[in-house]
Length: 242
Image (cartoon, rainbow, N blue to C red; front, top):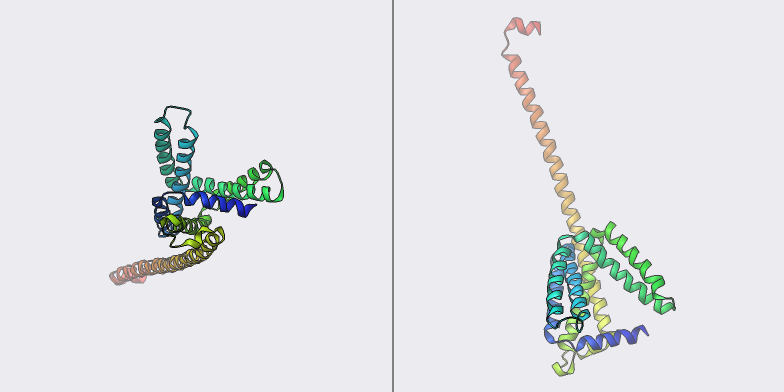
């Protein structure tokens, strides 16, 4: 059932215009290049884009024809900017949404009511996002970047009416396989980048400690030299007295 649902979602995504695929590929690059700081543009894209879609499609047919578009643009831009600035809370919301989706899928798979598991999973995701948002930022951007690459490549080059240069990506199994390979590579690069960053920080800290110790020794040596020079300039009687 999950496999057929994913295939239906992929088929719906393939009907998107070609520029949507190129936009996803560009977004994947923007997320990947800054390392864990790619969490900021990812939060802005997910939350801003999500609210834009919710307002645009949710208000259509309810209000005047031009109102949904204006509300969607304003709300999407505001939330995107806030999400980029407030990285902690926006990351928590993103992680909470991910866990909610996982909980909903797991509930459907095991025949449990969605409302009985999804909110608990979402609350746990919020907690993880708030407490561990820096560590989460090492894992989440590579996962979404690889997903955006796989989906963007499928939209751009899989449909037959666009030449089907990557016709294999019409099958959800191939798309998931590409996602998995890219996720493994990007996660490895992300962890390696963080490891090198910790090594540089440790080396810089050691160098700063050595520099501070050197300054302290220079100050003590200077104070000792001044005291010795002062002692040498004292008269002989004063010297005997001291």
